[in-house]
Image 1: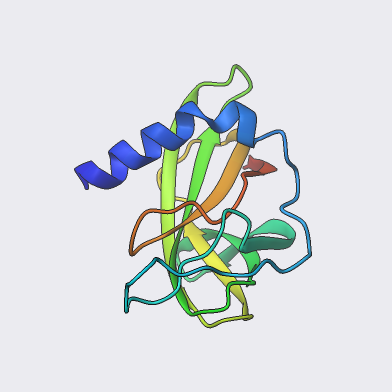
Image 2 (image 1 turned 60 degrees about the vertical axis):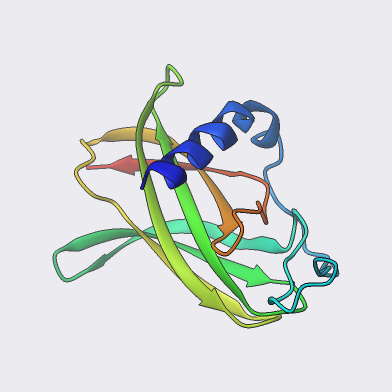
Length: 148
């Protein structure tokens, strides 16, 4: 938990720069492998591409933020998606995460829990990292959400 929080804080420090990009693009990028490693290939910074807009969905008692993503990496990847919730003043009020195993060139819906967040309007920054080595695999996508 501490390492994930530290990584999140490091990434958040760069968020104003990364949030300038509204869309990670649609051109698949080539993956690269670490030299001399037999581990799965890891991907460049834009291998995790957002498809369409995030939507709020309800499954049973849970409210979730659903975002479709495309894995343009040449290999399979365990990905963690972060959702950083901010109010109008820019203050971070919550950080939620969801994990997904994605096959190469797979399009998948990722569901991030919306847990214990007060009603209001939020700007959410979504971004993904590889679980294996904490390498960012996307730019941040900005999403506006209003909770009733």
